[in-house]
Length: 183
Image 1 (cartoon, rainbow, N blue to C red):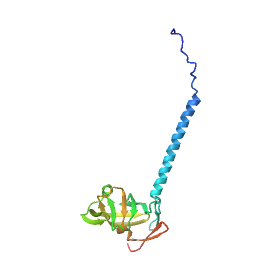
Image 2 (image 1 turned 90 degrees about the horizontal axis):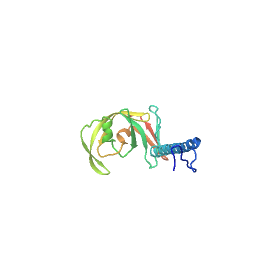
Image 3 (image 1 turned 135 degrees about the vertical axis):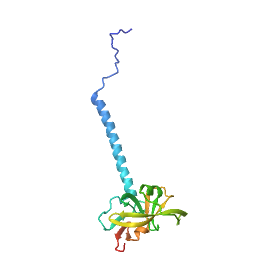
Image 4 (image 1 turned 120 degrees about the horizontal axis):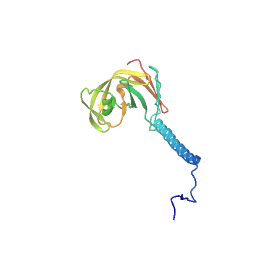
């Protein structure tokens, strides 16, 4: 029977060594940092594979050189009405085509309604006018575009209403875009 003055002891318990506890937490922290850094660099690699043209020439009226992404497309950052956007170059699109949700964010107005033929059939789109559009250092003003309510992503199709003002040369997975003087 134990009395109040006796302190129970366990022969198997050892006093915790503070350096051991700190070491365990430092090891866990190291693994966490390594995991976060690996995730960060892997995400950067995925982003580069999707859009290898995140940093393009911004010098005014100079050629823009784009690399194909891993799927063979030309994707690049640009601007519409001085707001950053992501373009997919599409020489098969008559106009610049903007998803409806993105058009709302760019404060674009519908200027009527029209029918167009697409690979998925005939759809209704809404014409609009872009005050400014730029790809690298190449800019244009008052470019016709359409707002497409059926597009559900945030990539804008950069069609011929903008591209017709440029000279395009493709060679070995690289597209060189030059401004022309007939804007």
